[in-house]
Amino acid sequence: MTAARQDAAETAAQPAGGVAVTCHRLIHIYPTATGDVVALSGVDLNIAAGEMLALVGPSGSGKSTLVAILGGLMRPSAGRVYVGDDELSRLSAKGLAALRGATVGTVLQGAERNLLPYLSLSRNIWLAQRPAARLAGRRLDPPEAILDLVGLGGAGARRVSDLTPGQRQRAALAQGLAAGPGLLLVDEPTSQLDVAGRDEVLAALDTVNARRGTTVVVVTHDGEVGARLGRAVTIRDGRVGAEGRDGRDFAVVAGDGTIQLPPETSAAFPAGTLFEVDQDDQSITLRAVATPSSLDGDDGVASASGEPGHAR
Ligand SMILES: Nc1ncnc2c1ncn2[C@@H]1O[C@H](COP(=O)(O)OP(=O)(O)OP(=O)(O)O)[C@@H](O)[C@H]1O
Image 1 (cartoon, rainbow, N blue to C red):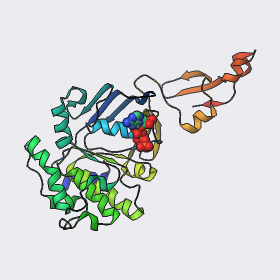
Image 2 (cartoon, rainbow, N blue to C red; image 1 turned 90 degrees about the vertical axis):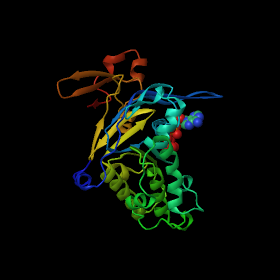
Image 3 (cartoon, helix red, strand yellow; image 1 turned 180 degrees about the vertical axis):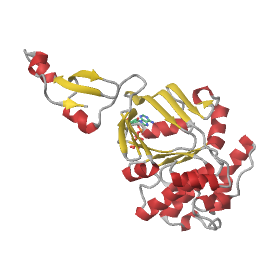
């Protein structure tokens, strides 16, 4: 949480209510007619309760699959995932339904997919609250209070179809927050918005996080959104490839000890390149000593020594 968010959280009337998330060697495979598709190949990720985080990465890297698992919409093929105290693969179908109904709010990409356009905002939220009230026996905030959180206070009587795209996206956030979840998962909330609309959505997420302590995970292709949330985790080839925190970029050691090189670095070193590894307390130095093509030749490693360069 930033200092501003911390201040707001301390003055908020509502108690903090975020849940932590832990993924350990998470694997997901889609069986298809043409063979298995490995969507997640060992995700290790810790998200603290009340943290805000962006999941970024190229198309097809596994972001939506990860979010669907965190939201209790799918079970992983292997590995463990905790949302709060619940290990999801151990939950019964009823337990998963309770998780979806009360603990996790999922906002799908495309605001309209989350809302009934012919109903008022209040009615939309009220309908989304019913399963949570039944499943968790919780007393929930009135719809107007939830709309207020996302900057739509006083708009409860308006119909979804009468809203601007930015308002509609914030209404979709309100829908995801209807049951008072500890974890809010939001898929591409800003992709169809102009800069002003994007800023309003980010401000709404900040407010939700500050006042409720809700853990917020946003899937986005927008690097600016990642930067504004403070922590951006890059999913590449189905695992955590890198992480940005407060403007600094980090490589991440996976649970199996591997580190993905940044794309621009790996482009300079073809697969099969041999490195010498030097390590001290604070750093690891990789010195490329042979490329696959040099290994194909007669003179092998020695002839390529020092080429194509150094990676550190
Ligand atoms: N239902 C499915 N059946 C088979 N393969 C799937 C299915 N859903 C996703 N995949 C595959 O799993 C991999 C990861 O997909 P996923 O949608 O999770 O990635 P993504 O990072 O969210 O992509 P995008 O940014 O385009 O939404 C891709 O290779 C995709 O083709």
